[in-house]
Structures are given as C-alpha cells and as structure tokens.
Length: 394
Image 1 (cartoon, one colour):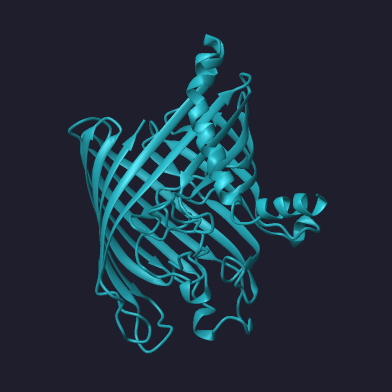
Image 2: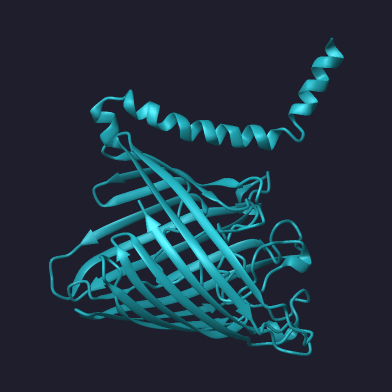
C-alpha cells in the first residue's frame, strides 16, 4: 500500500504536472465571473481587469549569417494575449498581476507562432506585485513593468518584467520653466545566488525625469549598474560581466495638432573591459549607443494615423542584449541553447505606419533593416523584416 502511494506521488511530479498547472489557470478564469457576481458593489469597484490581444503577420528575408551564408526566408503568423487585474485594498496600497502567453524561458517575447503549440498554449505570470502610494512617494515590490522612463525598447524590452523593489518621488512646481521633477530608483534581482545579496545577478538604477514648458519637453538622465550578469542567458553562460551605463534621454513635443515629436537617447557604458580576457579585443571598446526618432500623428481614436522613423546605432556592450528588444532582427543565442535574442552590435532603421480602427484598436506596419557593426566571422550579419500587427485592448 505504501509503495502504491509513493508511485502515485512520483507520477504526480512527472508528466501530469503541466496538465495540473494549466487546469489551475483554466479554473481561475472560469471562476472569475462567479466571484464577481457574488461580491458587493464596493469590492467590484476596487477590482479592475484589463486585457489585450495582438495578431501578427511577419516576413524575414535576406538575413546573412556571420559565416556568409543566408538564413532561410521566413513567414510567420503570430499572436499574443494578456490578462491583468488590480485590486485597490486601501487608498495607499493595491495589488496587481498579469498573465500572458509565451514560453517562460523566452523573456523578451510573449508571442506564439501558429503551428508551434497546436495542442496547448503556454501561459506564464508576467506581473505579480504590491503597489504603494502616499502623497509624493510611490513604491512597489514584486514583479512589475520596467519602471524607468523610456521611449523605445532598445534598452529594455516591454516584455521583460524585472523583480525587485522600486521607489519614486514626484514633485510638482508652479512655474513656466519646470512643471515637475521625478526621481526613480530601485534594486532588481536577475538571478539569486542563495547567499548574500551582493552575490546575486542584479541591477540598480537611478533616474531624474523633468518636464518643462507646459510638459512639452522632457529630460530623463539615468545611471544603471548591472552586477554579476551572465554573458549568455538561460544557464549557458561562460563568465559574468558588469555594466555601468549612463543614459541621457530627451523627448520634445514640437506640435500638438498634428502631433509631432522628436526624441533622442544616448547610452555610454563606462565599465572598463580592457584586459578582460573573456571579451575579444575588438569588442572591448564597443560600449556606445544612440537612438534618434521622429514621429507625426497619434493613435488615440478612430481615424487617427501615425508615422514614425527610428534610427539606432547600438554597440555590443552599450546595453544588456538579452534584456533589450528582439524585434529588429533574427539574431539570438540558439547556438548556445538559449531562445533569447542578442540584439546589440547593429545599426539600422525602423519605419512604422499605424492607423486606428477604433479606440484601443489599431493596425501597425513596421519595417526593419539592420547591419552588424563589428563582424564575428567572415561576413557582417544583416537582415530585413516587415510586420503587420493588429492590436486590440479591453
């Protein structure tokens, strides 16, 4: 009898566990309406849900590898779904969570390709946090969106939710030159060591965000320090590396109707890699990046349109490549058994055109063309990509 019980316990921890996990998610969604119906009006007002869905048609072509050969041209149909909830426990404290489609170990990309997961849909927790706010001070602890001001994903992907603790203080001023000043800071753990906090893989950041001239000009300088970061994600690293990145960012609203904006970002990693035998000499000085963008239009209501151009020059160690976006090209760490992207060491252009079909519903066409800055082999990697996205939010 004891042997039979042990066998059942053993079997539970094997192939059936993912099924139980997915069943838990399914029951959670099925019970949500029943829960809401049975609650008082006051609780319903405190509990809010949000959701969004994206469908994508994507084409890649003329993508050269470092050995001079070409990747096969590729067409994919993709989608992403997310569901989130927040609960205002008190005026000063709330709780939030969000789940999404996507592989758990593919942190930069929540999208799934039609045909890859025909029998099931992988779902992961993207956010789980407690949020605090009182007067000028706000904070959160847990897993949440990247909290620092940014205007693109070339430093940090929107799909990557850091885990840690964050503080922010905002001060308002009544004058024509300076409307507000905000200070953002936090400590975030990438991988715990199981010993002391200073042995973890982590990053810390501090940022000032100032708004000027009726909030039409915004400056957001920052400093980010990354400690004990693996050179390759997902457990296939060969050494750890540190980054000390200075960021200077600015955004200007030139006109409000039609809305015309320009933006600029400059990144400089001031960490010294000279003499680091783990890094090739031709890459030791590759620590600078700049991004320039200009756009006209907006996508707020039905009939709105928008066009935006973005040029980037991103050297190898200007940012952490597997925490940044993976939109621009098909470069990844698959040869090192990791699905994450390695989107640095490139220069390129993005052209985006969008049209709002309704409020919270739009089409966006994005074209990317990239070329490697420093070659890793006999030829420079490059590539072209075009995407058509249908987005809807609830």
